[in-house]
Length: 190
Image 1 (cartoon, rainbow, N blue to C red):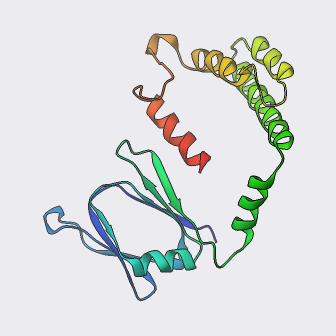
Image 2 (image 1 turned 90 degrees about the horizontal axis):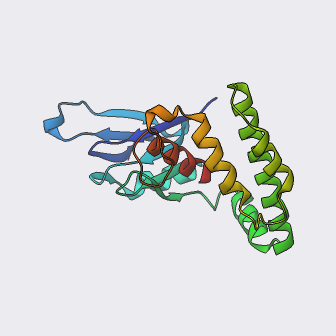
């Protein structure tokens, strides 16, 4: 069964009641309380400063391997709660990543950047845009990407992907659709 992702972007109180996530809203909102079986949930995104969540609910979510993501004042992911007790896989994966040698980390980063640049070039090609320079960058990436071909390729990619007449600028604090891209990247990074 596909697990549900629940997003909370309005004031609410979240608690546990009979193995269910119970959501109650402030009276002035006019919304009725709702419940969702905890076993049906895969991820909870907490994206409002006036959310209240009970410890019993957090415990139950973690026991059921539900990821709980908290955002900051800019609605970007700030942290995540994950279950470490029930499954050792996550802890083992983190330990393995931490203990990896520097040459291995640099080599994996090289492979990641090569593929990212190649994928960006193929997307541009699909839309009839020039991509040979990005393909060239993908073939010159060295271990650890010391020449920052990732950044060079990204600058070319974003300029070509969006219509220049829209005034799109890729940056950390730019307006949409940039903010949506930042949010997507942040979720993927988690």
